[in-house]
Image 1 (cartoon, rainbow, N blue to C red):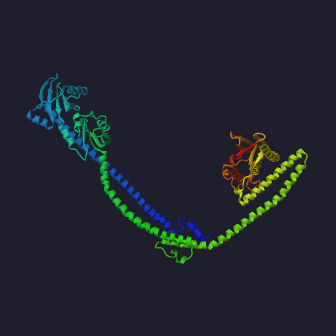
Image 2 (cartoon, rainbow, N blue to C red):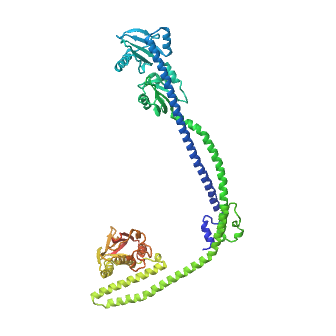
Image 3 (tube, helix red, strand yellow):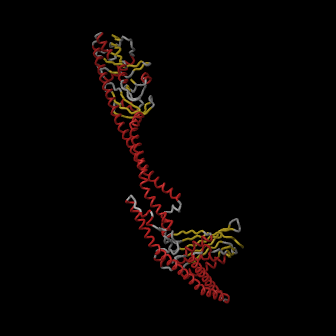
Length: 614
């Protein structure tokens, strides 16, 4: 291998044309630029996400704190107001004093008062505007007072809403059996609720102790006194809880976040809600400045990345040009090339010097490598020549043995001796086949050898093969069984020699690696509706040592033998199954192996054949 070939393998993208070298240069620059920008973009994206999350978390904390503060403030205001209402109501109930008391009642939005005797008859009434004071509501409150033994204590009703006329009633039972009722208007409560507005839809809402709406920014909801007791946050307020929570508001048709509490004196619920989307919008507006700053940072970072990519790729491109020159001229004139010019980068200059040393090393070792390859080629040729010569020398005496066996067979009249001579003749033929395969394996010419198809009588072919190996099995004290399923006089067209070698190798292996038990040789001819086509299937099984899962994947490799004391104790080249595998591929035969270590092996061979006669 020359130095130019080595360098050309280092730079396979360049084949001597400038146009082909431009694309990889652009790829190097682009990759550096894209990698840098992508890294910065990921960093910027992570920064944006973190910033937005921080803004959002901080905004929700501030909103929660603000809304709860407003709800508590509104609760305190209502509590003070209702305390004043209660005090003025009791003052007037004890001793109505005329115009001055009327002004006090008007100041706290009590529009009417009615005094009843013990028989529930009206003794006195203050009602300048002739407002309705429904007796059925008063009766319910009186029943509550009597049930709780709260005589002398003013009790507030729930929201009374009569066709849009909404108000509260205050009732007190006197010790003498009479009672006083007053009508409290909602003007102050609704003014107080309307005073809290923020954002686009931020507001407050007030509910009575049964969940009916007292004051709400949506007029229709307020006038109807909508029952909101089904809303989770209203239920919390009715239970006297205080806190911050999110909920869905049907009137607003939005998800809301609200601070909520209740009024101690009456149990009214107060909440200060705001749409969640307004918070997100506010965070987005607050984050816009950060986004703009990061965008500007990315722009300038991209410019820096572009300059950096050129700075890094420039020396690499010069070294690539130098490598191409070496690949084209074998490294001639190194002193006048780009490699002799120092780089502005210490690392690239170090790489240039290392490349120079590498090339000089290749130059020095090139001749040694060529000499070693020449020596190896000569030795390999000598080994092949020796193996071929030895094979031919072995074949001559073997042919003589085969000839003498043939003559002895012709002159023999003893049937038993004839059987023995037939076995010896078959063994000589198999030995000849093995020598042929060794020669073919050494010269690597198997793939170009033609197939010699000839009609073969299945009975004789399988019988001779079985008889040879039955003799070997008998010598080892093994049982050799056969099962032949085909018509007695059927002929098939096969390459007799190659198929014999395949089966002989497999049967020999089965006998070789079985110390006790049996070897089975089964043959099936599976004929189809096409009388000329069939499948010949051989099954060879033994009770030997088997093949481990680890060795199973290597058994077709040349010269492979299992690393066990038993397999090593049997001589062999480890070519048997390798030759079987190659011959099967040549014949179009499929081979399947089932085995378990210590449990024996079963090999199945399936070969498509042509039936040539009966």
